[in-house]
Image 1 (cartoon, rainbow, N blue to C red):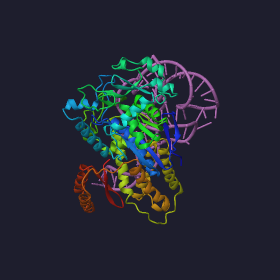
Image 2 (image 1 turned 60 degrees about the vertical axis):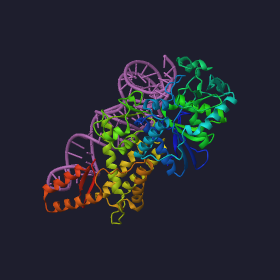
Image 3 (image 1 turned 120 degrees about the horizontal axis):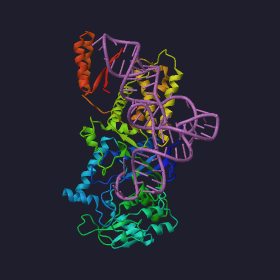
Length: 495
RNA sequence: GGUCCUGUGGCCGAGUGGUUAGGCAGAGCUCUGCAAAAGCUUGUACAGCGGUUCGAAUCCGCUCGGGACCUCCA
């Protein structure tokens, strides 16, 4: 089996993952700014790191997974006129800022739960770390890497680079290029260099979220919270930092600068970025107005959807591509995923009931070897920078054998006890524990189903075919289908 | 304009220079009262043009198309 490799944005290549402390992993992922509902694009990046988190734990690491909640400091614009996103929504909706935060945090948690994401180990909020942020600003000023200007404090890019650092290395920016392209933004006059970014912003009197500081009333800059919280909970240097591609610049670039400036250490070993979800080839984003809310997807209420799609269908759909590729979102693609996902959950139901039976059938080395290979290939795929698409392909190989055994087309003993057991346990492990998929109950409870199934058998035995058809129609009406096999009769979720 | 990514069969989507990715849809077969499910078989492919190579979807160049970041965005 291959060792785990991840694509490190910092070095632009896949690297073998080696934690700083053997057996332990510190993982930080940028969470949402809770001023609005999370949309589907956001979900993709949380999904990527949910799978990573699950897999790391599965392979025996003790993982501390920190994912923040941004509840202040994220500006609508960048200049002096920039409004805090939370504050803006609070004004619009005539609510306390913390009501906004609570409402959308609740929604966020609900949606994540629907998608079967594991909760992080720590979920810190920016407002809960005001002291740390103010201390960080003080410290940066003392080090001469930040300066106060008209009640705001800015990070000094030139000083930082003069000290031997390389602002722009993560996103591949060249300082002069950035300077040439700088636009006329409000508040630039306060800065020594147009590229300097705010670590503390002076608040106008009417600004509803503000805190006292040595520089007057204000609020922290967006990038600072992640630096403070990751350092506090994971240390000066930690293993993995994740987020969407669109956060590379400026957010993550600024995090590196702040971290390095504060502690003298490179804050992160492996930077991982998930790619964008697209709609008709274009990035899904709130500002473009082409984003889908999870709730709209689950109900099918979005105008461009022609049916509802369940959370697990969507999760599966996203896992069919590799996280560093863009993924295009469409009805046709989702329908295909729904069918494929239901085939797999039918397999999941079946595999849990399969028992090994010794028989005269000799071991079929070819089949045995194909299963063993698929299991190894699954791990190799995940280890190859979380290639869930290739991993899922292995699941279908395993599914084929599960179905064959179930349909009496293959005797368990043809695989030998060991491979049979591996088939059973790994299918469940891969599907539920690593990919984080689960069976969704689509219809009635089992007692009703079993009663109807008994009726079906009776009608079938009596050759009452019109009644048989009625029972079939009942099942179909409940998202199920009858499996009328030679040796037994059972049901499955309709695909 | 700068930096970077990308163009795979009807659709989605993997692909480390030579060996079937996979899924969905389509066709045929087995099974079936008829179906469904399941299994088996199967067609259509690497944007275009050059180059490197014994051999390229994969490397290089050019052309055309799509996209991302450079401003808030996962």
